Length: 175
Image (cartoon, rainbow, N blue to C red; front, side):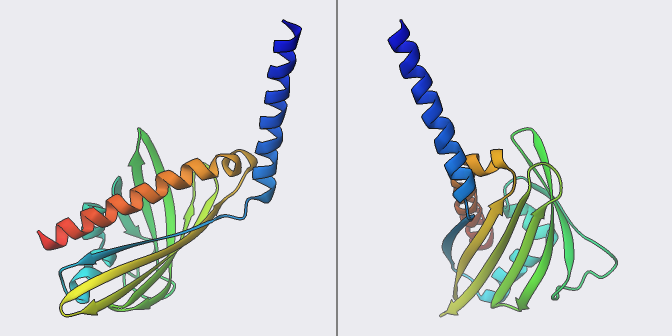
């Protein structure tokens, strides 16, 4: 019985050490995704920037509202995104860092409630023969010890959601 207890304690201690190591060495994550859509980049870009269209393809997004009176899509424009998933509501604020109509959109996201998370999403659109490839490069990081430990699991779920969203975007545009 003492041997089993000793083994269990050693395993628990190793798991705690691993969690501490993961949290201390966590530098954030980076991933990319891509989708090809049978439509011109001008149409695809509108689906990526107009709030009434965003809520149709981004899973769980229930609203995207500008912060302030200016609704023009430009560097510095800010909005508040509300996402509902798994019975929880998450509010994020976004800021446009770069915009080249029909070619590029770079947005910073920050959770304003719950765990600390900051992310930058860079979308590049490439049109050829009436088809548009959308490429996403995203990098982000969680704050707080517990979230850093859980980051690999949460980030895996995030990748899955991005791929599902891209498929939904393609379906919405192509009909």
